[in-house]
Length: 237
Picture 1 (spheres, rainbow, N blue to C red):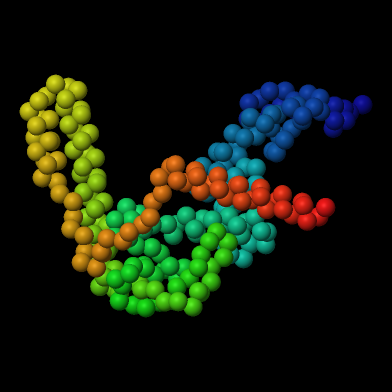
Picture 2: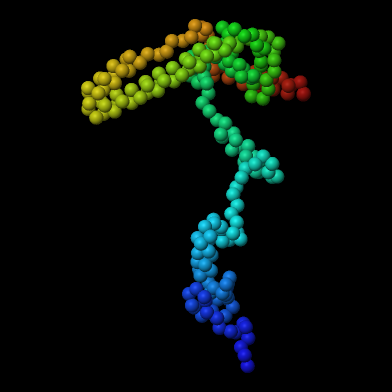
């Protein structure tokens, strides 16, 4: 009696092992291979032969991730938006140290506001949640003035960077015991001068409270709150 197909003994065409049974590892896979390893070898050989980058697990196709605007899900749209945001970044034209040194503030429409500015612009009230015009006018820098402020900002940044580098050099030279190098760094540090402030930047006075006064203000504020609470309780009674 001839043996059935299931019980017929077959050998792997690649490694020559005898294929017996019908388990996951024993069943003949594509083109009669005995195991996953043999099957994979054949597929990889086929790929190298044709010279195409095909994935053995995706039916010979590779899928690339692309972030497009017309993605259906919110998650993909958000991902694309965040990616674009990261690419747009850059260094601000006027640094914070230059802004504080020149007494400049930024308006809600991107104007650089200063009392000696040439352009009258509407004054805005701003807090964490709202901004609205107050009806008054303030002054913003004209393009030539803004150019001066940007140049000053660049020079000030260079001055601070050089100062930091020279101070670090002096401390390193003293630690190593090289007095000549430390002296040369010290002379360079003495020559490193701060850039001149532009003509439009007059000193702007900002009222600064000491720690004690600030604490006293906070206490009085809380005291007033408590008094108001007591009054409201008495009225209810």
